[in-house]
Image (cartoon, rainbow, N blue to C red; front, side, top):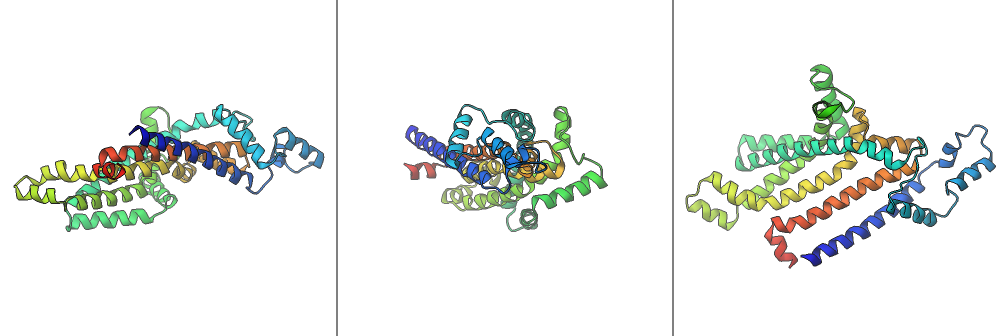
Amino acid sequence: MLARISRRLAGLLATLVAASFVIFAAVYAAPGDPAVFLAGGRDKLTPEKLDLVRAQYHLDEPLVVQYGRWLGDCLHFDLGRSFKYGDQVADLVAARFPTTLALVVYATVLFVVLGVGAGILAAVRRGTWIDSAVVGGTTLAASVPSFVSAIALVALFGVQLGWFPVSGSGEGFAGGLHHLTLPALSLALGALALISRVTRQSMVDAGTADHVEAARASGIPESEIVRRHILRNALGPIVTMCGLVMAGMLAGTVVVETAFGISGVGSLLVGAINTHDFPVAQAVLLLMVTGYIVVTTLVDLVHPLLDPRVKEAAA
């Protein structure tokens, strides 16, 4: 077990280093010259002033040198200063991250509770109109892009019915929950559809196992069979998929936060890209990639504990 954890941690570090270089190189190669923005625009901008700005911010150095300097600073938790705001990037990200984290957690609760519940219901009522309704509804939800669902939710629940605010993040727990309901639901719809279908299929597969058929033949009530045998055996794939979906939700916040005017790291990334604020863009992208890699690694470590078959295969 310790050897497996060590291998996964080593792979985690190697992946993070490779991902950090890809992020830095992608931002480095993006169109536009940040030196022009730092110098205050092209008006009355001389080549000498432009060279001075590049030298001041080390923008005239080779890519590998800039990356090494940036990575070293990141290891000391120094993400640099924002080109646009002049503040420490770490402070900007730290101020907005709690809102994004709350949005992701809220959306995760929604897609886990509703998605797993719908999947169990469809599997238990397999072949009935309930099963068809769940499959059809989740197929429709999965085919709708998040920005389209955001517009539809705002139009219906925000404008027409007036049940929820259409922008902002609110104050306090109750206010924040109220303001984040529509964004969280918009973020969770696609995930909810995926989780419900994975849950249904896992439950159906587990329900055909020999020991389940033996339990049915022995006269054990179906509700107990579902709870003690089917759901327990189906739990591994369900938890794994939930973890993977949650890990990818940080990237989904970019669209949702922009659509709902939420001041989170997703909207911060959009603003940084539009203004060529390279340090902020690199920091937010690194945060998103790190979150994804860490969560997927944890899921990989937990999966064998939930599914003995995976543990035996790994051994």
